[in-house]
Length: 321
Image (cartoon, rainbow, N blue to C red; front, side, top):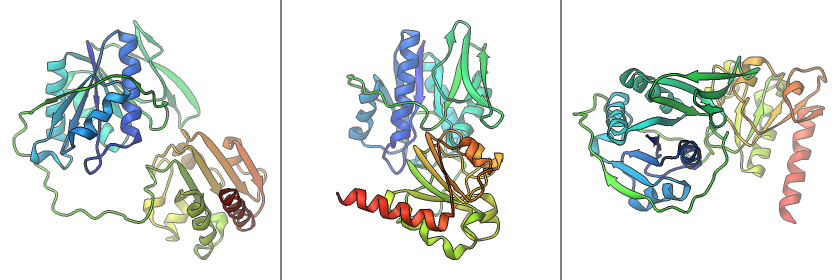
């Protein structure tokens, strides 16, 4: 019984999330005393594919049909299901992002497999197969038993450390019988010049405590100094102060950066649910009783319009030394 991991690529390149996923799959495989097979769908150069071997994959299935460069859930599910059957995969691992969640649910029906969704660490036990995850918007934890022969796991971003492995991967061409995908991409418009919020390791976010969209310059200046992405709470995006693309929270983007600076954000549970996997939260608020301080690792009681410029100066001074 092998472990199969789907490694998503972005314009033919893998990101940290893909390597994190392979590292996790490798640790699960070691628990099961088996090996890891990675499957890559779309056009990716062999040199890029071989990087997966550096994190434990011993075999890489390369499905690079020209029709598969754009995500088609049905076509991708067909390919991954066939790969799982041919490889005898008892565990299939996805990232807990939009793509992973879409494919995991389809594949669950196809293979009659239980899904352990949004996991944050390795299985607690193998017999019975029990996984560990956050529930109730991160307020509690649960241990869930997966009873089916095939198990599907989705891993929360930034919840598992990269573990390099001294292994050389074998690349094998893999063709799935998918026919012509039903989804046709006619145009692609990408954001440029900014760090994508879902990829950022540092995020500077603002709420209504910033008082006006005209005050957002201090957020952007700190973000520039830190090499960070910018974000906002839902009321800010609803008011039109910032784009909905920056809205983080239960109804917005779910992110897991290493550092999240919350300026003028009260800390409503819906917002905190979207950043609950953050490694370190720094809160800045004039109200010492704001709920955000219950979640924060570090808190500053003060006016964000004064604190943020001072913090930006400190960052620039530290970098200049």
